[in-house]
Image 1 (cartoon, one colour):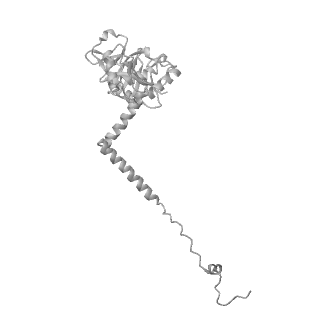
Image 2 (image 1 turned 90 degrees about the vertical axis):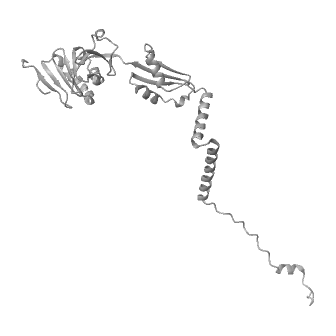
Length: 289
């Protein structure tokens, strides 16, 4: 049908020509800066620390409270010290009590805080015992094993004989006449070097029965005199272990006590100088070996 002039177009056509509304805008998300996060965490931590300091009075007190909480937890779970036992000093009650006090460990303390190395160091520093060893016997006991210093030598100080113990101390309460079999020492400050001498002799057990006495030279080294007349010249105490090993090897190879020699000089590392007797026969040792 032909369109009639002046008639309005249908609404559908009008709607077709109308502009569509624009779509809603997409939400914009703020980008998170990593530095802002770090700064925020630092501020939170600062607030927490400041609050803890205000509550506890100081940061040190906060640490103390944490330690106390850990100690309480250790005690609640059975890991608190119940006993500190000292063995090896049963015949020396005074010394035994001193070692126990020097451990600085009291019943109820946290077992995890009882450091065996620190305890041993404190015990050894007393200078009163030898062979100190410390053990933690879980869950609640500390065991300290120590030995008393025993008489090891007799030293003539120029006026009288004195008993010397394994720590190099003169023991006034002991009579030298009661210890006739001990090693005899001479020379100034001989007790100071007795521990080094004993180490050297311990590596040469075959020579020990032949020792007549040991002479301290210049307050720093030893000359060991054997009953046969042989003198063994050792180096300074700091090098005596090396010389002791060389002496043991030389004696095993050459049987020094059976040789016609009067001196073995071990003061030079790696060298042993032997001095033959004047009337030595053709089979005697050379002067240097």
